[in-house]
Image (cartoon, rainbow, N blue to C red; front, side, top):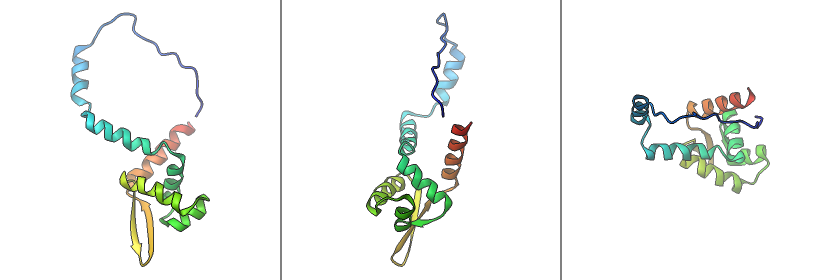
Length: 121
């Protein structure tokens, strides 16, 4: 994604379109939901977490495998998985002594795919 100098055009006079303003104010979610949404997107602001999500997009994996694939320590992977699990982006299942992680649902893969599509345009 390339950064460009972008000029923002502004109206030359102040004229509020009341009907439009009122319709939009009725449609915008409440502040708490917007805050939750901002927190959700903040999780994608860390390259390590995005790498983990992409690995899990390919396959369900345990912490040991994730550490090997991403060339990181198990401790570092576990730390990031905790954040991803708190935000309901990943889920886990236990098989004996092994815990496997996967993406929570298809929404997460769609977000990753659409984000990548957007930056590759």
